[in-house]
Image 1 (spheres, rainbow, N blue to C red):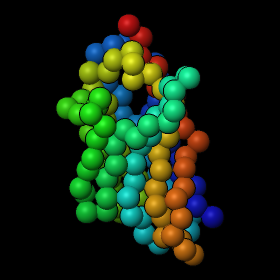
Image 2: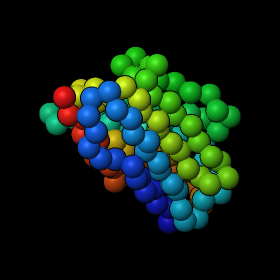
Image 3: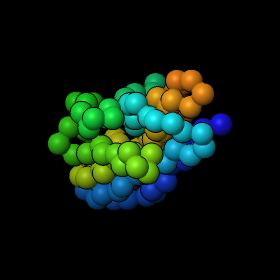
Image 4: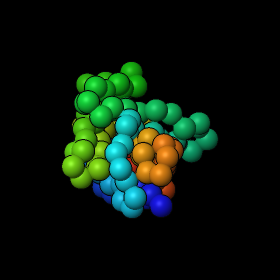
Length: 118
């Protein structure tokens, strides 16, 4: 059994920063891509950023230059540093990971709420 647990969400004023973390635990052999997604009320879930095991990254255009994704392979953890936050960044942020355990599966965390006030 593999679990992803996010932390670091909260309430912040526009222009502020937050750092999200997502740690994988359980029967983890190795992890391929790890990513952050978000879903705002009334909207579909969208990709925010993704990073592969080698450190290559990809970002949504809306967050380029403001957000940075990173990972610590030894800790099976992915991070999302969010700077210059805007009210439109308000959403539930969830992490996703392609985990090799008994086989290769995608796992999701339960999400953490980020609220940016104007």
